[in-house]
Image 1 (cartoon, rainbow, N blue to C red):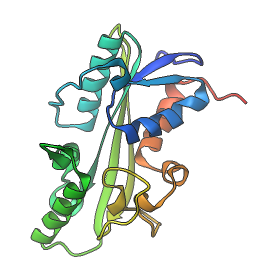
Image 2: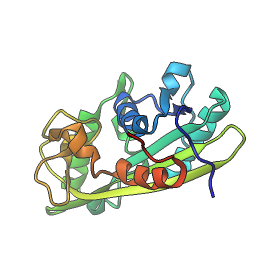
Image 3: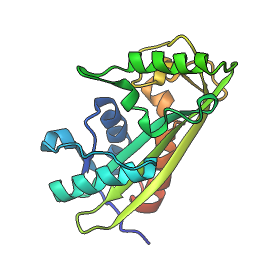
Image 4: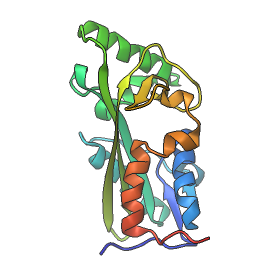
Length: 208
């Protein structure tokens, strides 16, 4: 059985993404766990050199755990679109990189251009993937995988989420993630799917 995180523990969330930090904090706080971001610790983001979400999540969790000397939780997530060979995949954030920082409007336009260039007919089947890795300073680690199926919608709609949320419609829905409230989106998304597995394995049950 894996080591457990208990109420009152502090963890470092290995991200500099404010939207991702908000989502993870909302997931762990009901369990009485304090989540502090890598940015608050002044930790540098390690280079993500793996070709899987699991591998990159582990890189980030290991680095944060070693530097902060605390348990670390890292998410590596991304969008995979069938009509363009599963891209952008692990390069989801890279598509948004510019000299001035990340621009997801640019990334979404590139995604649409790639679909157009491929001559792909709608519906454009896609899924969001998440790998949640937990690492401890002594080297113990574990990874949980989550996924949500859906499709790409164009043009982008909504400003409630982050990243590619305005172009992703979950299966069975008509609104994009960008149009949904945070509570509604997180009730059944890729990160909550992975977190449900994580919580069952290593978190103490919630108490009133």
